[in-house]
Length: 277
Image (cartoon, rainbow, N blue to C red; front, side):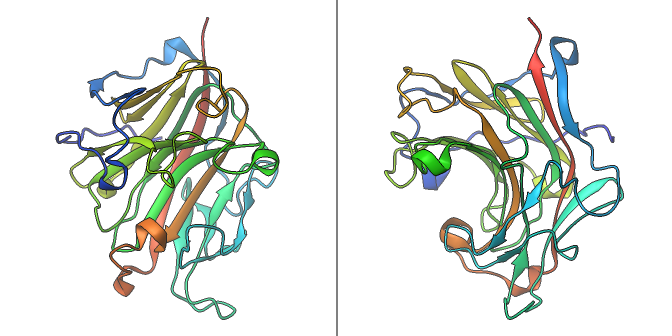
C-alpha cells in the first residue's frame, strides 16, 4: 500500500449542520497522534487485492432507494457501480438511466456478514468531490431491526458533502443525540483539497469513548456518559457501510451538478485492530 502523504490542516470548525452539538460529552480539540502499530493487533482486513466483485462472504451491496431522500439508486453488486480494480475498491456513481433509474451508485455493507466491536477501524480512501456528492464511511448497530434507528447507534467515521468539500465530518447518533432532534454530536476538520489524494479515516472505539482521526490528527472525541443505551448504544456489535450517495437531505442542499459524473469513491483498505493489553 502507498504511504500516506502530508496534508495541510486548517483550523477546526463545527459543521453548520451540527453546530448545536458541541457541548456535553464532546471533545473538539485537535491533536497529532501518529498511529503506533506496536500497540495494536490487526484482527481483520480487506485489502481489495483481487480484481472483480468484492468478497461476498463479507460484503453485500444494498439495493434500491435507501435513505435520506437521496437521488441515487443502489444497484447491489452491479460491476459498473462497484468493483475491485488496481488494488482499490471502486464505488462509482453514474448518470446512466439504468432500468429507468436516472442516477446509480453503490453502498457496500457487512450487515449479516461481519461485525465490529471496539478497537480501531481504519479506512484508507480517496473521496470524490462535486456539488451533490456525499461519500460516507460509517457503522450501524446490528440490532437495528429490533430497536430501530437511532436507538441502535450510528458511528460516522467520515462524511463529506460536495457543496462544502474541504470539511471532513465525524458524527455519532443515538436515541438521545441525533440530528433529527438537533442534538447530534460531531465535529468537522477543514482540510486543503482532501479529495486530491488518499487519506486514512479512522475511529478508535473504546468501552468509554470514541476517538475520530483524519490521518494522524485526532479531531473529535465522544465520551460515554452512562450505561444507558439511549446515550451509549456502543457496547454491542456494529456493521460497516461504505457508500457514495448523491443529493439527499444533506448532500443535496445546494443541488446536484450534472457535470460531476462519473464520480469515483476509491477505497484502498479496511482494517480492524484490537488494542494490545
